[in-house]
Image 1 (cartoon, helix red, strand yellow):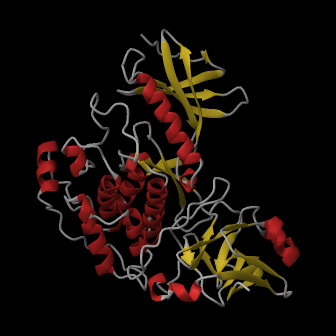
Image 2: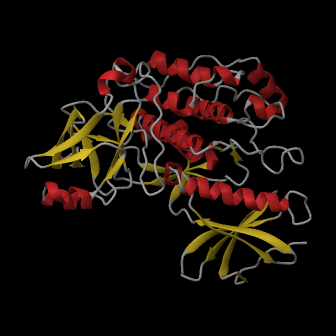
Image 3: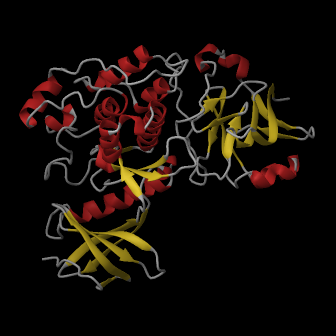
Length: 438
């Protein structure tokens, strides 16, 4: 039998500082690594080494970690540091994660919104909604289904430098599902989920899919943007299941006014569709994000797959309406290159997905020093060009003077820069020019 760790125990170089929680699957601790970093330390009780799918679970965790690290999802997920097996009473699996300091979870934010409605504006709620859906979209793009989305599993790190007030981290992904690989516990153990956030697939005992995450997100979006959880009156799992299967949720009435070009009616329609009992009728996470950003009329063009070294899009403040990609004739854009022309007349010519940072921009002027080494990515998809900001950069990515934190389409004449939109500071402006390859 695995034995619980105790304060001051040294487990594979990690010194236990404090017991945090004992759950059905694992025991959680605060620990300190050999380098002095405080970490979230997890000791697994289930699966135990005696379980037939134990080895498969360990390998599956490694695959989950790899997919997160090699995709833009890494900027939305709690950072996994290490995983290992140690003889601890018996062979036992451990994982360590970044220790999130000074954060709230979405549940606390929702409680605050209910108890002190004026403490968080509708604009802030909307940005949190956009960031959440961008994170789920990134996860789905990486081929991962969270499978247990609920407010406590959405950690929010306080950040007064951004309007939303928080950065987002998804946690508790131990029993998340790889979209293209059946998990080793399938047929041996139930899929993980949480009461009042179960999708219809959870309730039917089926494997969760991407649409299952969208369902759970829909419930959270009702709480964040509208009048509350649509099935809060359900007293138990049976009543909740009946309400879910009968599609009893009314179309939501938003708590504020969506900024143009989005409309309350369109967003309410998308949120209601998230709760359809039929997963085929639910929008994707990306489509919900597009709707929140006022791009319902745009074709849901997926961003190109970003190489591991690049940075990520987050939907949020400053998104501006862009011409729908579907309105452009792909034949007109075939063979195009994109040029970023600086005020000096020098330019960067781009023909493929390219990460733009301080090093590359030095040739355009000394203000390149204000760029992060990975400020933003210029990407091409289906004949259109997009800019994907790195939201972790010190200075904002600006398009036509507006800060962006989501992927947006570029047009001829757009001006890219870095700076601070609120203060009117824009450094190293570069004008977008599109032309055919010669």
